[in-house]
Picture 1: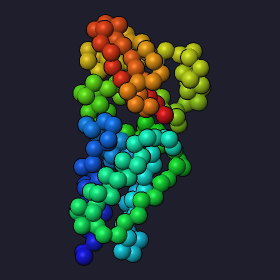
Picture 2: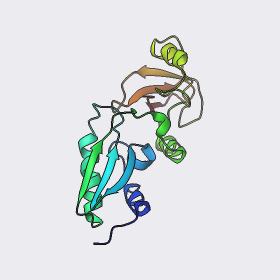
Picture 3: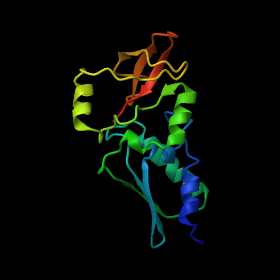
Length: 171
């Protein structure tokens, strides 16, 4: 078998949708950290959104399935937890896709590696985060619950259009 170029492998991986948010790919989400050849073995390094992500096994299965379907016989998936994944790794086109899908993307600068004082303020509830409604664009929104349809989302409501929506939490 002729080894495909790494660019080709990245393209294949970019076709795999996130199992919880199918409008973005695993590469758009930024959880595939590296792809490399180790002799005849393709090594794919994956950083889950958080260590307890329930979709991790499905993600790994889909990666293996896609690569086997493309003719990769020998592969190894490696889990990398350091540095931890952050919402800053979400590509700009994925943020737009989230919004079009009805999920408010993370507010810029609020990821785990953002400014410490601002993060402490937000986590302690001393700061109101201006989350934009993905339906009408208003920032007059309120958190309904810290937990949304999946562990990585919070439930919000727009006080202008009154529509509920998920907010992709900053991790």
